Each structure stands twice: as C-alpha cells, then as structure tokens.
Image (cartoon, rainbow, N blue to C red; front, side, top):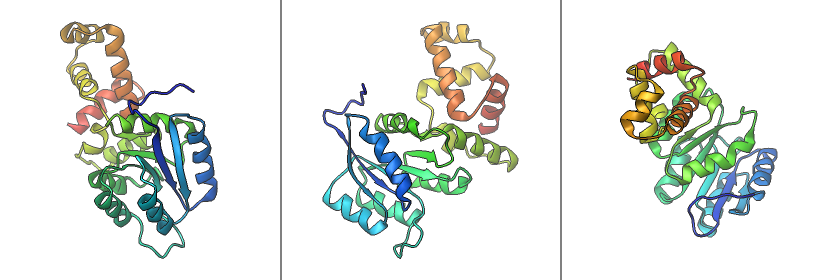
Length: 223
C-alpha cells in the first residue's frame, strides 16, 4: 500500500498491550504497510523496557494499564518512558471514558489516543502518520466523549482538543465562528474554497462536531 511519512527509512514500531489478541490485531495492520517495521510486540512492562533498550523505535503503541503485572503502570509508566526515551512518540490505547487520564497523559507527552472501543482499528496508519507529522491525534469516538464530558462538567481547559488542530484549521474555525462563510474565509486567506472546506471538515472531525451549530457551540465553550 502506498504511504508517505517523510522519513528516509522505515518507521520502527513497538506494540505493548497485555491482551495478546489486541497485540496480534495491531501487528497485522502494521505489517500490511511496507513503510512500517514492527520491531516487536510485548505483553508486559518488563518486556517493553527490554525491547526499547535493545531495539530503538520511533513509535510506541502502548496500553495504559497492564493487569497482573508487578511493574507500576499508568501515568508512572508514561512518565518513565518519556523521561528515558524522549524521542519516542507514544500512541496510547485507551478506554474512551478515561478523560482525566488523557489530559494528564497529554501533558506528559503522549502524542495520540486511540480508543479500544473504536469500531475501526484500521485507522491506526492514519494515527501514526499524523503523529509522525508532529500533530496530536484523538480518535473521533474519544473526541465526542471528551466534548460531552467537558460540556456537562463545565470544564474550561481547551488544551486536549485544540492541540489536535493545525494552525490553519484553527484559523478557519475562528473565522467561521465569527460569522464568515467558507467563501469569505477563502478570499481573506487567499486559499481555495476547496482547501478551506477541507480544513473546516477536518477540524469538525477532530472536535467531534457533527454540524455547524455543534462546531460553534464547542468552539465557544473552549474559548
């Protein structure tokens, strides 16, 4: 399958999860892409650190919690990985209701979040691509849950959601919320209507907005 990530060599990936079925499924998806190199799959924290030490990777796809493992996991695990291997980009496998944990993980340095409840794990290559390009990624299911949580609890911190948007996507949403049409924004920014429409659509997907009204409400809540 064609794939471009800007790296001159293959992207080395380690997958860590205490559920062998999950590891196997993710490994299969990674192996389908010639630009990805599945370095190793592990099911324990000890094996994870041994793998990272012996086989450096660019991307770590990691569970948050490892049951029946004597080693400490969770935020402590993420902090330790980021401290020892700051160049590794971490994609965290989560339950979409772990919203407070997600906010803390983002502050630690986690780059992407993929819900285990997601109907389509095949979006993983897209997640990896976005993370490699320096973006933050939160899957649509988790974004919607985060927005709902934020609205119902009157939370004011926009960091987790807004960090997903590129500078141009954020610019487009700001202008749209102020009342400018897609055509107006295109003229103002000297970009095509198609480009502006695409950037607006991507921003809506990232923020979990199903329509223009939701987009305006979410943005006003965030700011």
